[in-house]
Length: 278
Image (cartoon, one colour):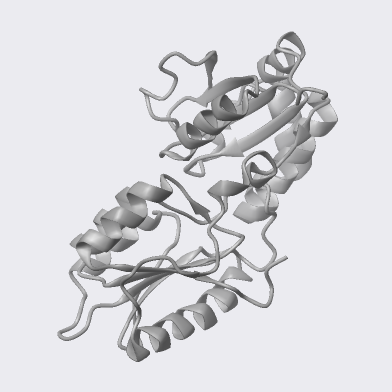
């Protein structure tokens, strides 16, 4: 049996990079961690082989791919979109950014363009986390003993309709709906900030639902909607009663802990089978 090639993990913030590293260890797959400065959690590397690298270090990254014999790369974790002045690109990164026009692309288009530049300049193949470890993907169906009622189902459907419209405009991946009323839509601030904002907007009566689905045009190799135990805790603080995520196109990290936390808090989690899922 031919061993899988070494995997380069370009890591942003959150727990998803840790889950991928754990998966690689269970599978016996060799990996090298590239922690993005100002994005990845400072305690992420621990005992993993790694390097810290700024976003604009294109030439350094290209050399690293060659030195470490990395031929496959995953981009995973939360990355706050920076301005060009924050990136401080070297000559190679500046060449790439000039070519793709960083300010003219939405988030999804930008990620596709960056991944293509990795493949063109670094001679690597950018793959999705689901190509490495399928168990991170959310399955379809109600995943908790807690069940959504008819009103929650209506809120979920309302959220799907909203996110399909806004996702096509590359706006965000999440919305909070309570009793048919939209309490908030995710933009650049991320899901945690969205939930914190919605905590002060909730209405009397049954709590709302967090709905997270992939954008219709989204490349499945990166930036898939993600939930974990921290999401459940934030949902509880916001006074919501459920989470709906797209099955097959969302990451459910720390599955056992996430579902246990939801069950304990009386929060339901549903994996949605949608028509546009590949």
